[in-house]
Each structure stands twice: as C-alpha cells, then as structure tokens.
Length: 513
Figure 1 (cartoon, one colour):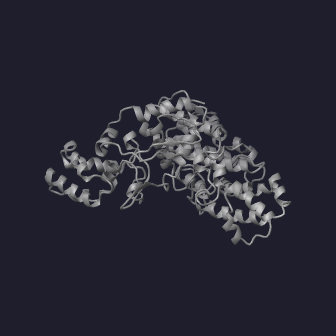
Figure 2: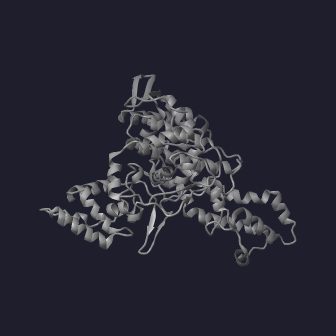
Figure 3: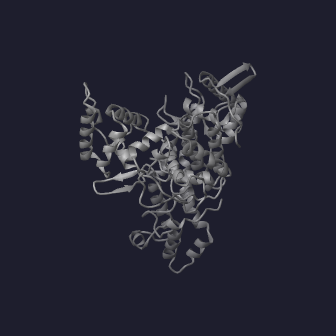
C-alpha cells in the first residue's frame, strides 16, 4: 500500500466538514460528481492564473478573481434583448435605459461604473452583440445554473474567476461547481515528473500570449475584482503516482499539436476527465489487496448489436462497484492491526475502539457513541461502514458514471444499462493525443490498452477471455468497427490488407513521454 501524505494543517481538525475522513484518505479532498471535467479545468486555470507556475505544496494557497461586473453584464442581464427594438432606440436612450434596469437587477457592483461602457462601446448594438457572443461561447452556457455559477469561455486571465454564492447581503465562494477537483488537478500536474516543462508552456499558451477577446472581456469588467482572502487548496494524498505522470504527458502532447489554444481545450478537457477517472478507479483497486488495475472493455457501436456489448456492460458495472468496495476495505482493515488487538484486551473495549476509529476516521464522537446500540468493538466498525456507504453514495460514488458520460466514454444507446462505448469526440481526442504523425493501427490499439486500459481488439483481450463467453473473433470485429469509425472521421488510412495507419489530418509534433 502506497504511503499517504498527512492532512495539511488547514484540514487537520478533530472533525472534518462535520463528517468522516474516509473517501478523502483514498482519493483526496475532493473528487466531486457535480464538477464536470470542463469545470475542473476551469478551476485548475483559476488556480494556475494565481501561481503562473506548477508548484507542489501540501498546503496550496491561491488568490482567485471574482469579476462580478463581468458576470452581472453577461449572465445577470435579462433585459438587453428588450432594448434591441425595431427600429432600434437611439444609442444614448438605449444606454440610459439599460443602466437604469441594471440598477434594479445587478448585484454587488457599483452600477454607476457601467456608464464607462458607453465610452468604450458608443453603439449599444455592438455592446449587445458582444454580450450575446460571450453568452453563446460560455462553458455549459445552456445550463440552468444560477448566474453566479456560470462561466465565460477561458479566453485568458481576465476571463477566469471562482464560483460564487451571491445573496442580497453577501458574496461568498461556493464549492458546488468548483468543488476542489480543479485544485487536485493542479496538484497532480505539479507533482508529475513533467511539471517543470509543462508549467512554462501553460503560462505561455494561456496567460502570456495576447488574446483580443480577453482584452475585450477586460473592458467589460474594468479593474479585476479579487477575492478578499487567499483560498486554501485541496488535499491530494500522494506525493507521486504514474497516473500523474501520464496525465502531464498527455497535456504536453496536446499542447504541442499545431492547434489554436481554444481548439485544443476540449481535447484537454476530455483527456483530463479520462485521467481523473482512471485515477479514481485505480486508487480504489489499489486499496483492495490483490486486485488488478481496472480496465475498460469498449464496445465500438455499429449498425447491429455486437457480442462485445455484454462485456462492456459488465466492465462498467464492475468498475462502478470498486469505490464502494474500497471504502469498506479501508474501514474493516482496522480490525487486522495491532492497535485493534490492544483494543480487544482493554478493560473498556468499546471506548477504546471508539478512540481508534475517531483518530483514523473522525468518527464517532462522544455524542455518537452514547446514541449507538453498539455492544462490542465490531459493532462500531459495522456501523461506520453503513454510515460511510451512505455518505459515499451522495457524491463520490457518482463520479465514475458522471464523468464517463461527460467525456463520451459511456453510453446507454440501444440498452437500458450503461456501458463503455466511446464517442467520436473522445476518439478524436485520443488520436490527437497519442499519434504524433501516424501510427500503425495495431500499435494504436496496444497504446490505448497500455496507457488507459482500453480493451478493444483481440490482442488486448487475450488475457481477458478465460472466463467469458465470447471469442477473439468478436474482438477482431470490434477493432474493425473502430477502423471504420476512424476512417469516416478522416483519421485512418489503409494502404493494403495488412497495413493500416492512424494519422492526424495535419502535421504533428514529437510526442513527450
């Protein structure tokens, strides 16, 4: 079992978030299902904007922006469309009426400063078109999130800010959609072996290069508005892991491709979601003694149902069960320690057991113990397993299904159950990341298996088929369907019966790692 880092001082309390310290020991604080991969990358960029480098720290601190004027203008501005009349109002009248409406609706900004926008955008229609553009390009802009939890596209440093909860009398940071997963992503990249290389590239691509849209965003915002206090970052239990290195290698590979930074961002998001999913499942498997690293049997969907579908369904469900098994194993293994043997010989074993569990998992406290019908130490362990499972089910257990769907790894198409069936978008991201110029198709399948655990073709399925009622020919057909998909996407070329290449539709670059 890999040694875990201690909690940072900011989290070393007798009671953590009013609940138990269990999921956090395995995965950190925190992986959160309501924070999509896109929002994870946005939170990461918000942290990186403050540091402008990748620096490992067990007690991460950073200073985020709030950009309240920008957010009010773009997302808390329901009346703008009413002012675009036909024939249009004179510009002066439109500006005057809009500012009056904003005085009624805007929150926690000096509305009088909006008059400066009239000088920057003399024609109200130009201003309205800009606001409409920012709304259309917003990340998950069609969601029904409150206006203070909506985000413009990350054009540059002026476009980055934290999630907020805004009420009539206060503004505070919120952790519902920026749930710290982006902070964990920052720490993973900072702890990778490629951090020194990746940090300057990220700074140059996303923060130092001039971007005209981000400049216009700064005109809407005016002077940046900062959070009043430093934010304390999340907790990542491991100093180093192969998963961190592979994540950083894929980021470097994508950033090397001859694509504009905005075109490469969706691919960064997809591969980030995949790597976080792999981290989630592999840490769960590592917690359970003797369990192999999880794999993903991927059905390549064709016109007819394939024999691989049931295996892909079972693969998804087996991985879905792993995290729940991991937390139970973490709790129950306490009974195998010397510390627990001492508990059993204590004159008051129940009290002694409670102290051990409280020290390890922040449960129970004195009041809990008084209200429990426990008669012996084992009863406490059983009760904690039940409570931990209930808490785990609320959010952490949903990470696998939520992220797999979000990045295009899973599907219900043609079935009532979820299975692994990668979409065209994810396949494009995998090709872009792993193929520098061109790669022989069988080598590409092997790379997907070695790097991500994807089982698609017959060679990767050999060790998998011992106890399954399909044969290698079914996986060969599955690989053929992938070849057809890649060909239709312009990412595949067959030169002869025995020679097929996956290739990029443009010139590549040498791949890191």
